[in-house]
Length: 173
View: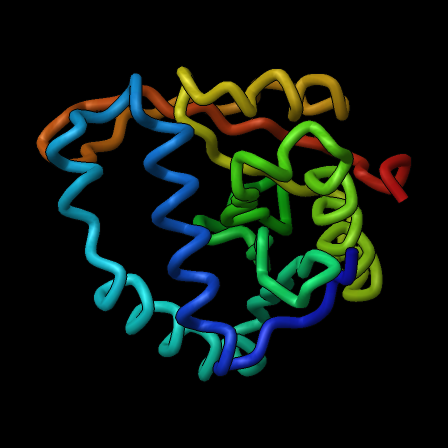
């Protein structure tokens, strides 16, 4: 397994992982018709834009490839987006194809982002997660504490979201 910085050329594969993971992870959280309508082209266009501006925006995107060179996961993070007084960096997303989950890849991707945050002089971070997302157990197992709550709207549905925070993430290194 190889973890590396993402390139613009990775946008189609990242978009595919993004949509496939939403469909498998959120199938019991979001309506099936909403998940079925997710547009690969729209998601790819978003990733191209993000990858083109990531460096100047202090936005870091990494991909994981399997032995065949296929992108099977990605992690996305950077500066905390709301000027939180405690948490200075943020993991925006970690998505792993279902067939590759529960194999330690999530931890590796988190450590990759944490290392980057540490290099930038940060020691705290958070991640926002849908409350019913099975990944909540993963973040709790890595020492994340529930620190913030909000409601968001996705596809016409109001959902609860939790922020897991680490005031000092360096133990994850």
